[in-house]
Amino acid sequence: MSIDPIFVLAMMGTAVFALSGAMAAARQELDIFGFIIVGLAPAIGGGTVRDLLLGAEYVFWVNDLSYIYVASAIAIIAFFQVHRLDGKRYALLTWADALGLALFTIMGTQIAVDQDLHPVICVMMGMITGTFGGMLRDIICNEVPFLLQKEIYALAAIAGSCAYLLLIYLGLDDQGAMVIAMATTFIVRGLAIVFSWSLPPYRPKGSS
Image (cartoon, rainbow, N blue to C red; front, side, top):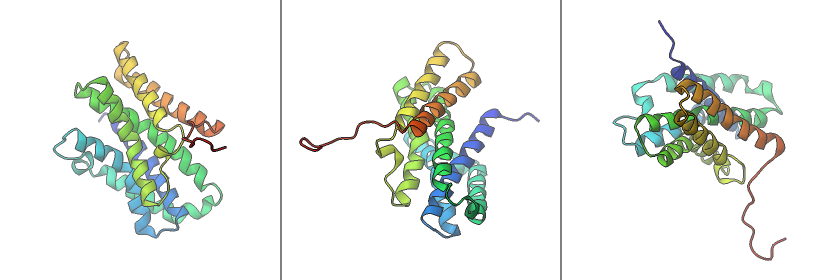
């Protein structure tokens, strides 16, 4: 029985995004049900929006409950173990989110490419898959989403999606292109985290 590497990456993305949701739930001191809901938000939110926009008959997790099971299990485990991470929760949330962003962005791009959509739409679907779940998580927790802050977040997703499309155009095999594009997304986001890179925010005239 062969193991589908795409499915493995999907489960990894689900797990790390669910972990980021659990860390956000811990910051808000939610109960175990809150952990599960906030864990599910980033794990399935972006892909759900993508599938709805692409007119899928069913969103992906309706046909495969593995996503629900994995995300819920991670959230429940985190509820009982997160106390061991006092002082490190935000860092874990940030890096788990960065890894989930990298995995889900490129998987979303690949799904759009497989449907022979325009490259611009492919990039948009990748960005939506990678970022909208995290945005939903932050909104539930009454926080300004990474996507809407001056953080280099959506830009990292766009960079990874464009890298994937370029590599496919140049003839690289799909799995190799996915790995390099995921690494591109993670590196761009990681560098932004480490060096506090950000986009310039709007400032009204006359403000200092």
